[in-house]
Image (tube, rainbow, N blue to C red):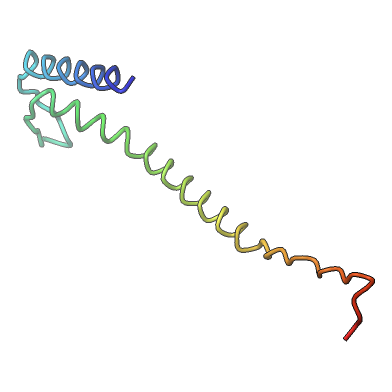
Length: 95
């Protein structure tokens, strides 16, 4: 099964590399007023993807952090369970 996941990611990497090489052209981006930036198309797509991924990644990390804090608080609240006192047999004398 691990072989299939490796094969899948290698295939994705090859397809992305093929896409990048076939579309390696400059694109002009109008920033504001009269400022323009010239950037390669695959790099612009990568930057746009990462900017879109960042908020969801930060949200996931925040949820994991709060879940970890909640679990730690619940673990701290649990008091250790004491063993019940041993029963004294009827034939033993009391001290």
